Structures are given as structure tokens and as C-alpha cells.
Image (cartoon, rainbow over all chains, first blue to last red; front, side, top):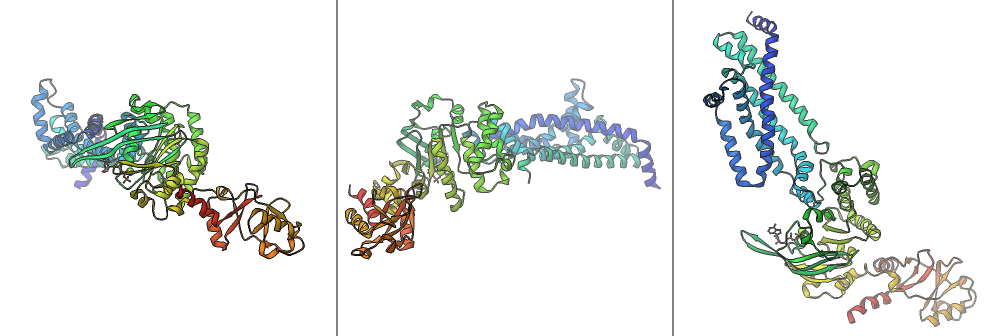
Length: 219
Length: 371
Ligand SMILES: Nc1ncnc2c1ncn2[C@@H]1O[C@H](COP(=O)(O)OP(=O)(O)OP(=O)(O)O)[C@@H](O)[C@H]1O
Ligand SMILES: [Mg+2]
């Protein structure tokens, strides 16, 4: 009978599930979008200097080891000074920070792995560094950069679920309420929705990766 | 056209300094192909890359068309020099058309004009534009990619081309084909070309001038024939190989070794005329031609002395003839395979032009050694 009850709860709350899914997607996509805008240029910039690259990647991997609960805790006093200690903003910032490592690292690796012969051909033909990036290096790096974005999105759908504890909303709200009220219906609804969202997002990004990969590079 | 003055490149490496190119002076004339040749690590690539500033010289000067390349913006300079790298380097994310049009696009050519040019260039190297323009590099064989690599460098019609072992990545048979195609193109294009190779046969075939390097130093720079006939030192003699005289066979045309003004007879001529012609010319054979002056047979002195009647009663068929535009290698090969010591030569219309003998060839090749 338990199962039926859970199903009934889901059907009765379809509207709420949709609303919280949208909140969830909004946090992750805004944050990962910003992470792409920052991480990709950083990943490209650090290919110029090995030492700087090592340092940046080290910092990014330290950030990712900080548990999300701790990170939220750290942000509350800081962001409170602008009245944003809890809610949407700290959630976006956390996801933005966690996304840096996969995106920077994949960008850095992909650009570095572009065949040196292609770089030399491009230089020898008179391409400027900017033209080289736009016409050769970035198009060839897209599949690997997109793989980094996928990692970031899937990982941060989980992180965002925890952000419900700081009032950011999203599907995590079902889980936190479920724990507080020992309500299995809400608990399962939240867990299942988050999982499905992660799977769908992963498939969507895989499709997008295929679309963005230049035809001549596809295997 | 290209002039190098005391060009030097010293690399600083953790293991010490490496003098890759050492005070090189040389000049390549307009429309010439100069092949840089030498053992691995002797500085050929470095020398080439200094010309388009991919490597900045430690000292020395490079002039193109009398202008110091220091005075150009490197990007500008490179767009006006065709560059073919050894690894081909087609961009996998671009179609063949896009690859060919890179430099024209950067130079701001009209799109229609550059796309038409791409199709035209593909035809020049025997690749069907309808088939290849929209393909990606990975859909081409190695030899086809190499052809595209070469025409990509030609796309913006630069007066100067730098080519680093452009045909290195193809099998020997296809390499010959591409070399021939390239030489044919060069006859009309007349580019000034510096070409790196480590294959002496390729150098002899392609070059107007061969520059031989050792440890960064230019050891000898001369015409292929001169190089083979007069290697400046034992290193060069070893490098060009013990069979260097045989290699020269490729360089000399049949027409150069052919005795011209040789007499001929027709089938109707009396034998006495043939004998007189042989005596006058001092050759023990005379060629019989048909009404269109094509060689059809010959009579030998010993067979016809004191004989009567027309030549048609006494002639022997010719086993082989050779086109006077071929090289001596072809002529010698025909002589060997037909077991003859001389060949009748024909001109472009197939008419009898003269004959070539083994002695004549030996004499011609030997002559330069006794100068
Ligand atoms: N960027 C570099 N840094 C340090 N040393 C270099 C560099 N480029 C070339 N060299 C050295 O300079 C010398 C000449 O190299 P180069 O590539 O010009 O030789 P190469 O004649 O083209 O040889 P190969 O026939 O093998 O291509 C070599 O000893 C090489 O190790
Ligand atoms: Mg080289």
C-alpha cells in the first residue's frame, strides 16, 4: 500500500514537482552557464604557462573537496552582509565554484592536446592567436570541454538538492521536508525526481555535445 | 628572390647551446626550386622556418625580393608565403574547401573568387571538386591529403613557397606521381620554392639548385648535375651515393646526347645511297623512314656494302625508338632491354630526329669529369 500512497502523493503534487524542478534547473543552468563563461577562458589562458596552470588547477581541486554543507555554512556570514546569506545566490555561487574544476581542467587538457602540427600549420599560414583559437583550437576542443560541462551539471544537480537547506528551493525541498517530517512520500518523490533530472540532463548534454562537435572530428 | 646572409640560429637548451644553422649564405632565384638536403638534424627545417619567422634568427638577415623580412609584420609575411609542413596539417574540423580557402579568407578575398579558386586547384592535382570540396580531411587517403596540403599553400597565389618534406608521408609510387604533377604545375606557376628533403633522388628530380647541409653549415649549393658530377668534398660524395653518375642519367635529356643532322633513307632509296650516307656521316647504320618521316627500320653497313636494289629489300626492323624529350635513363633502359647499342630518336611529332649511342652517352657524362 506504501507504494500506491507515494504514487498518489506524486500525482497530487505534480504542479509542485514541476515548479521545484524549474527552480532546480534554474540554479544549475545559471551557475554552470556562468562557470562556462569563466572556466573556459581560464582554461585557455593557463595553457600559456605551466606553473600558473598547475596552481589554478590545484586551487580548483581544493574547492571541489570542500563539502557542500560546509561551503554553504561559510557563505552565510559573508553573503549576509549584502542580505543574501541564504537562498538562491549562495546556491548559484556554490555550483559555480564546484563547476570550475571539471570545466577548467577539461578545457586546459583539450587545448593542450591539440596536435602541435596543426598549431604550427595555423601559425605558418599567418593566423593570429585569436584566429587560431576560434578556427582551430576551440572547435577541436569542444567534445572534451562539453564532457567537462556534463560532469559539472550532473554533479551539481546533487549539490543543488542540498541547497534546499539554505532555502534555495528546488527538488531538495522534498527531501529536507521528508526528513524533517519523516514523510517517506516526500522523501522518495524528491530522490526520484533528482535522479531522473540528472539522467535527463546528462542525455540532453550528450546530444548537445554531438551537435556542437564539428562534423569532421566525429568518429 | 630569397637571399640569406650569414643566417644563424643558436638554440639555448638545458643541455647547452645547439647551433642549428651556422652562418648560411645562399640565394634562390625567382621561379627556382631550391632543395635543402642533408642528414637528420642538420638544420634544414630550422633554416626554412626562419624564412617565415616561425623561428627567429639569432643573427643574420633574410631578404625576400630585396626587402628585409625583419621589416614585415610576421603575420603579414606568413600570409604571403605558402607553407607546407611535413605532417600535412589539414584542419580536421574544416572541409577541404574551407582548408584551401583559409589564407584567401584571411586576406579578405571575395568569397566567390576563393571558392572558385579552391575548385580550380583541386582539378590541378587531379581531384574532382564535386567529390572532394565538401569532404573532411579524414575522408581522404594520405596521398590525397598531401595534395590538398600543397594546394592549400598555393591558394592565395604567393610568390614564395616553403615546403618541408611535402611528399614525405606517401609511398614511393604515389610520391613519383605527385612529384610529376608538382613539376608540371611549377612549369606554369613559376614559384620561388625552398623545399626540404632528405631523399637525394627527389632532390635531383625536383631541384634547380640543391643545397647540402651538415651540422648547420651549408656545404655545397649547386645545380643537381654539378653536384653529382663535382661533389665538393668526400662528405657530399658519400651523401649523394656511389651511383651518382647513374643518377645523372635522369638529368640529361636524350636530345642533348643525340647526334643531330643524321641522314636517313627511304624504302625506295637505292642501297648505294644508304652506303654513301653511312660513309659520309661515319656511322655504320642508317635509319629508314616512311613517307611521314617516321623511323621504320635501318640498314647496317656490313649487310649492304656491295649489295644492289632498294633499301626495302635489305632493311631490318627497329626494336625500339626513344622520344628525344625523355631522359637518358629511359634511353639506357631501352638499350639494355632490347640488347642494342644505339637507338633512333623521335621528335614530338614522331619524326626521326637523330640517333643516340652508348658511346655517345658515356662520352657526354665523362666529359664533365675531365673539365
Ligand atoms: N626548438 C628547438 N629547441 C632546441 N633545439 C632545436 C629546436 N629545433 C631544432 N633544434 C635542434 O636543431 C638542430 C636542427 O634541427 P632541424 O629540425 O632543423 O633539423 P632537420 O635538418 O630538419 O632534421 P630532420 O631531417 O630530422 O627533420 C637539431 O639538433 C635539433 O635538435
Ligand atoms: Mg626537419
